[in-house]
Length: 167
Length: 158
Image (cartoon, rainbow over all chains, first blue to last red; front, side):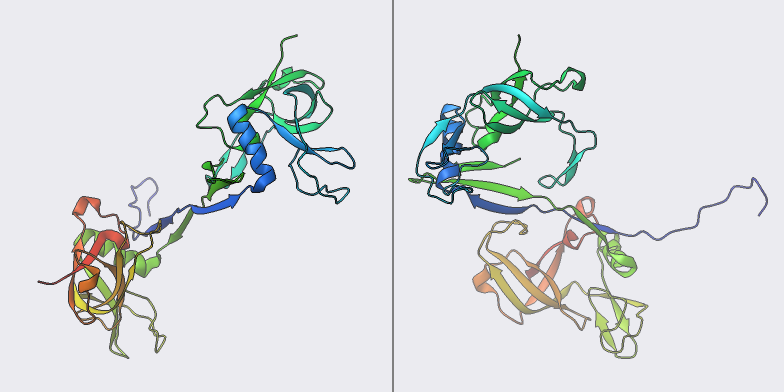
C-alpha cells in the first residue's frame, strides 16, 4: 500500500456487552448490646460503652455480652464516653479505597485516627481536618454529630468526624 | 455506608439493612451478539440450524448440542409459538421487571426445535395453559438496546 494513501479501517462486527449490576441485599440484627449503643447515639447523641464487672475495662469497639479477657458475663453496666480527646495516632489516605456497597473506588478525605478520649479509652474514628500538614499527634479534638435525626442510626457513624478544638 | 437501620418493635435490637453492588459485564459473543442485534434492528428472532441433526436452536448458539458441529446457518423463526411450560412468581424480587405476579414461560417458537425462556404478559396467571399459542411483543424501536428484554413479553393470541 502506498504510503500516505487513506486507508479504510476494516469492518468489524458489533459485539454486545451485557451489563449486570444488581445490588445484593442483606440484613443483620445488632443484638441487645450493640442495639443500646445505636439507640443512645440516635436518640441522645451519646456514645456508650459497657464495662466488665471483674477487670473494670471499658469495651469501646464494640459492646459485648461477655468480657473477651475475663470470660465473665458483662451484666448491664454502661458508661457514657466523653466526646473530647486528643489524637493518639493518625494516618491519611493516598490511594482510593474500593467501596463494596457502591462497587466503585472512593477517596475519603478524612484521615482515620485513634483518639484517646478524656477518660483514657481509645476510639477509632476520623478527623475533620483534611489538610495533612495541620495534623499532629496530641491535638485536642471534639466529636461532631450528624444533626439530622432521620440520618442518625448508624451507630459509631452517627459521629461524622472529630473537629480540631480551638486552643 | 449503611442504607438504613430500624429499631425492631418492642425490642432493644436494631436491624441493619445493607447492600453490596457487584458490577459485572460479559460479552454476548459472536453468535449471541448477532442474535441480539437482530432483535434490536430488525425485530427478528433468529436461530441457528444444524444441517446434520436438522434442529433449529432458538436463541441462536454456535455449537450443536447433539453432534457438537459448528452451526453457521441462520434461520428466522416466527414470532408466534406454543407455550411448553410456565411458572408464576408471587414473591417480589428485584430481578423482576414488574410487580408480582410475574409469569415466566418456555415458548417453542414456530420453526424452532428448542424452548425459549421469557416472561408472559397481558394475561391472568389463572388463564395460562400448557399448549396455548403465544406471540412476542417487542418494545418500540428507540427503546430497544440489544437486550433479551427488547422483547417485552409473550402474550396469548386472540
